[in-house]
Image 1: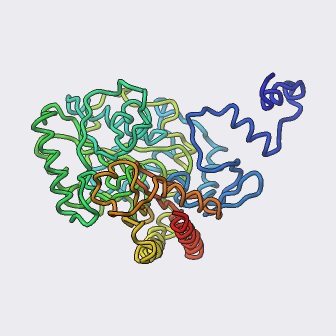
Image 2: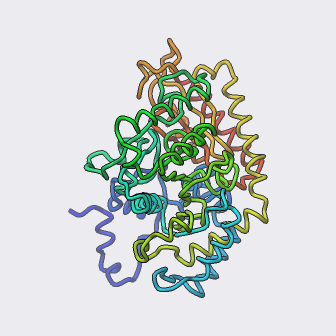
Length: 470
């Protein structure tokens, strides 16, 4: 006998278009039966509406959203200005294919982004659909422009799930498990994160930077010659790897090595860019110049759009037709992104990011300083509204020899996921990240003071309950 959902879909009335299964339960069953098992979800139910910092499910449940679609709806759900810009564009031109002619929103978006670039040399734009496509394009450009093959990535880095981006992703093996062989010519070094060097949480930033740059020099001497190395790709704030901002000195060290050997520096700001980490782009806080800058996620506040930005002197070397894509730089997505850029400036979004960041960090440090909780909390870190708390674990990666693991403390693996689950039960969506016990906060950049307090209170209550249960 067919599954219940299949019987619904194949009923005579549906075949003639007379009615569809409309109940939440019936639709949820269709999802369970017919959506690929390769997708995972942190909550049950069906999202139906979103407004500002909240989402609603089809059954009427309302949730405070501190995930933003994984850092996408940076201005909250259905920002009126952005939604109107997209709707208006839909009535003029939906698809102006980039290989046929320029479309107006594409060029107006460049006009708005040029003043926001972290370095004036970044003046050549190509818009695509997703972050992983932007990474693929950047890797291709680096190989073509340098005539070299090899790429150096960071341990813990995340860049996507397609074959090139998957090859430079080093945050979790789940993304490439069973998919080999991946793109060849990829090497990696430790990111300046105490876990990756087997050092305690108290290890000075200078030591972490020194160790990571030493490993880079060793790699260039032992495994990939500079003459064979096209690019170094790095997230200036490690995302999926645990929300760790790169020290300024580390980014400066990468720039110096690239300058010395003619290697291109690819800065992946797909997640940490567009205000998420406290400035238009996090890299501007270091003063380091990217050769290629990648953006996506918050760029169009939910519409599929990504960008590859480089120097015209480099991109002029590309052969016309070597870049492209059917939906690349979609007119509706670009119109939405123009409205996002306008809102950033006119609604003073970055000032709110700074204020709410201080509020969030203060709340998390209060938990970390609580003597009943402090043995279970290893770290509070991040930048802007890209913030994480890492919990202790006596199980999992490196627990047997990791100096960060408190001696004599028995904490089962999964504390982060248990805290996140408690938050969801209490009405707030929250994500974990990395192979370590890390929860990440990605609230809207225009979240109110009251909603931030509400989220912090839910989180504090959840942490205390999990610790008591432990």
